[in-house]
Length: 66
Image (cartoon, rainbow, N blue to C red; front, top):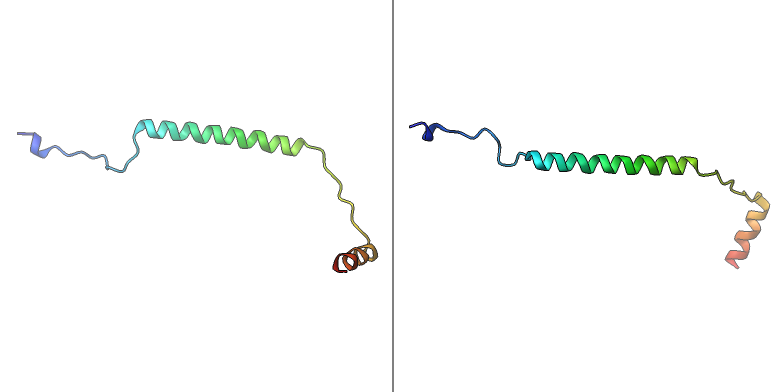
């Protein structure tokens, strides 16, 4: 008698506990990797870029065009 009135309140597209656990684990691993890479990039020595003077730049562009 109760069977016809039984209703499942979980939506069919709702993620399962297992999927939620896998997703959280994946996000955690991703955040750890990104954090480690950010620290490594931050710790790398800074490289100074040599800038050309405007006159040297004009000559280099002229040689490139010719």
